[in-house]
Image (cartoon, rainbow, N blue to C red; front, side):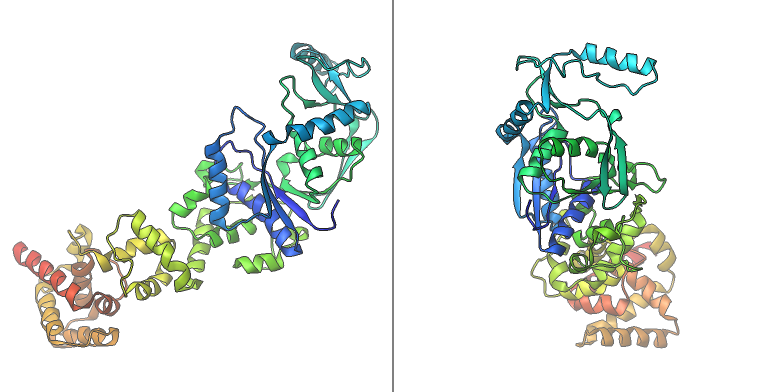
Length: 469
């Protein structure tokens, strides 16, 4: 086995890449990057009936969006049957595995008898010493020890010992010729020189079986680390109602991949009290020893708050293409070459929790209101509002300076001349310009809209108020 740290992520292509799988990939990837090691991608597609190319594509898409790259692979288990066969034959020839012709009904009867006698329901080893030849319908089983225990020196959970009497002679190859998960994964990890197996703790029950296969082959056992599961806020297993959707759904919802990675790494790993991490921070600081033993609790509100912080700290170069993608996805008319884009993004960064949120807020800079929010117009379109909008229009028509400072001064002059507070001026103007009751400051809005966009909107609002009488 190589001195280089080699980790792997081996998803089953039976669905999308969900947050639990993404976190497992992240931990393996970060450990490889932190140590200068290698990260392998392997597709465990031996469940032929449920595996689909669509799911494979979804896994690739999710990893690529997150920025989790791999150094080797992707490898497919269904293309490695010849490798598995070689190692299976070695075990059979060494009398470490054997052919078994017991029917499923016979095996179930053995288990029922064991239950009735208060023992673990297990296969009783009937064919172990029959020295059966290969034949149709036979499975191949591993000869497991009858005494002692199998020890897992778990990096995260600590030492775990499982009595060998609780492990029966389990199947390595099924009667249809397909290799079982526990056998295929060991041969894959062995032949790919994997040094560290970091995975969810739902695999703890598989690990002793895998260690026994390594030992039967006389091979060095990799280091295992079992990460606690991700739970929903109600501390039940994470499901769709908690947010356990494919990671690409988070992209559609306007989350930054680096924010999702930041949130996922904190679901089980910590570095002091620090909450905000860039990807470079994670690569530099990550360690297996700092993974906790308690389950992580997925909280959509915390993810959203962290996403807002990442948006605020992002550069224009980072946000601009993602912002334009959301504008297009929401079918908001816009010009990708609009010279105001960077200024609009800068204005909305501290006000946006997601990129969808940012795009929706930005709509008013590109599209004039086709109607006025009933609640906002009822609150802000008062008796004096018509005169306010006319006064603003009059002053705006005469001014050449439309900078934010000049626009702020213009609004204050309207307040002074009409004896009104700023809210009585800004409120109706906001509805006139956006159709809504909320937006950035009016000086900022006027400066970014400019006279050519503002005057037609004022005219439309004035006509609306005059028509209402």
